[in-house]
Length: 436
Image (cartoon, rainbow, N blue to C red; front, top):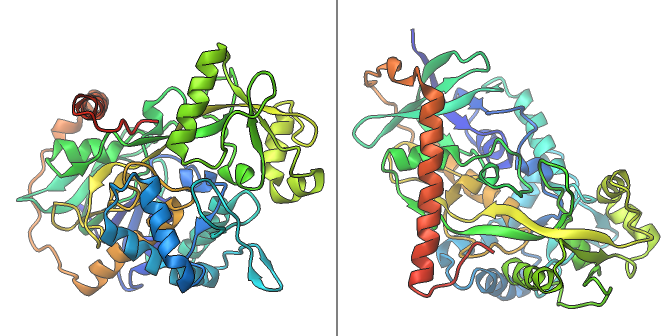
């Protein structure tokens, strides 16, 4: 007997959770995650979340986003994100999310390419604060059920309409799950790279499946490299040193301990400067110094970064730390409109797996959480206001998924090839390479 539910959400990061909470409680929602429920990049986001402080900040917020994105942004999407920002923050607070405040209200910090402080934060674990509170709220909802360690193998489609997904569990049992709507929130592509701040299981699965089904994608070569991850010879995910550290006054130094760059350049430009410095000196990293911030402020403002660096043998209050660029974020993905609809009916994409045009060719710092939440809410609102049941379910030959590992690897190879070909196309047409 086939399993059937109203809405399937694939992914349990901030975007997926917020979408689930924004869908009416009378809808039965099943959420699937490839790994553990807390193993999403949303939990790793350190810096913060942007917000429109007041109307006087609008023009500069808009211009900062476009300038960082090399003016390849979709302006309507940027407007929607900025205009929805304050309401999004109020809703997060209603779920128990706590941001740093003083007697005058919110505390704002500044990061690279921002013309003024407009970023809300919770210590140096803003993503964890937001995502954990959303997860706690989801677990209270009787209409939402989460399935961990369940990997999406395919979409069930008929005549350009999505009617469910095929999943396998940790024991390799494969099953179909039918639904009226599917929302893809599967995260980025960091697992395709040797050096990444992402979890390794995030390998662009939804994008690869979209390519297989002829669903429109966009800007697959737009991969952002974060300028500062902690240098290590160990294998595995790279530990991010948040951009907010530089926003609070940390400086970058060469091997002679001389400052060599403006630390608040947009991420792609700063990455280029750091790579050139490393190549010129024949080193493996550059130095990051927090000496101008002060011991007490380091411990209070960046307690978790301080703790992690101590575990690696570096005391931020007394010495510089070695940093190096690493893959961090995917600006491309499954193309969506202002309601997060894909080119296939009844199928939505949100978060890092989608491309709504907000980020253009390069993401402005701390816009990711905001963009994910705003467009997750838009998907939920569309489903709420336009709900349509699927009456007839297509036949599906489940035998085609017997050799699923080979199928998954083939899709990954196709995705990497498409990303590389998009990159080469840009080079041949003398456009900017967006891969940092």
